[in-house]
Every structure is written in C-alpha cells, then in structure tokens.
Amino acid sequence: MIFETERLLIRKLNFNDLKGFHSLESNPNVLKFATGNVKSFEENKNELKDLIRRYQLSYNDFWIYAVVLKENNNFIGTVALVKDGIDDEIGYRFIEAYWKNGFATELCNGLIAYCKQLGIPKLVGYVVDENIASAKILKRLNFKVVKQFISENMQLPETKYELFL
Image (tube, rainbow, N blue to C red; front, side):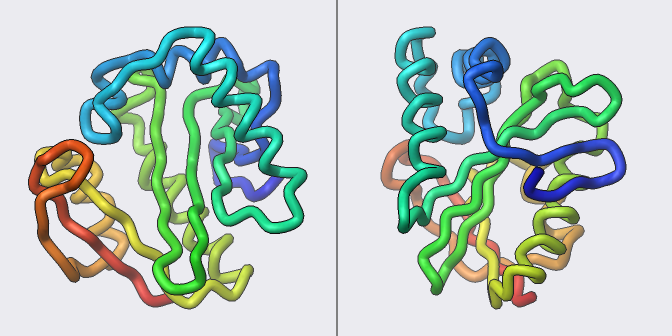
C-alpha cells in the first residue's frame, strides 16, 4: 500500500487490475479531458505491463497507482505522481460509475498528505478548462492558478495550478 484515505486504498498496479484499467482507459468520457483517445484491450494490456515494469526501475519519475475501495477492494481508478523535482504533477482518473461520490477530493487530500511526507515542496495539476469538476477540486484544496494556455495535445484551453506544501 502506498497510502490510504477513509474509503480508499492506493497501491501499486498489478495484472489483476486489467479489467478495471481497460474500463477506465477505453471510456471516451473518462479520457475527454486527458488524451481524448480511447485504447483497445491489447493497448491497455501493454500499457499496464509498462506501468508495472516501471516500479522496478532504479530511477522512475512516472508513478501510476491503483485506487481501490477499502470496502470491497474494487479497482475504481488511477492516480499519477509525475516527479521532476520542480513541477511534480498529480493527476487522477476514475471509472465513470464512481464519479460524483467525493472520491477525487478524498484522493487528492490523501495524495497531498503523502507528498508532504515525501518532502515534495510543490505540486502542480493541469486541468482542461471545460473540466469544471477537477478545477473545483484543486481550488478547494488551495491550489492557485499560475498559467492559462492552449494545450498542445488537445488544442483546448487549459490551466496550470500549483500548491506549495
């Protein structure tokens, strides 16, 4: 386990997560404000293998973890911590059936506490402006707007938020 919150466990991904991972990464609504591109089962299987392989690297700056419910151990999403020492970035995705249950806010609060324990001085998050729910979460958690721009990959207005820990 990496960390936990009241209702969630955050742990390393494993191959048993493939079904849920595919459900997450093949849903256009989930990816609408991320990559916008859904992936096939085979593509998701290969990506999951790669993410699991990264845990073994001596230097890994791209950590993706599973988010599971404590009550039944169901995989419900992923959380990312991309560390570069300057702008350590967070991100999260949830299977659509688990939206609007307060999980994202709970997860972000836990992630902030975890990053403080690691001694990370600052976190950033990038949110496509149309993703009002994620923007509200970051603002509620005292992230401040530092930059607004057009995203390179999706060509949509996006905002960079940061939080000093």
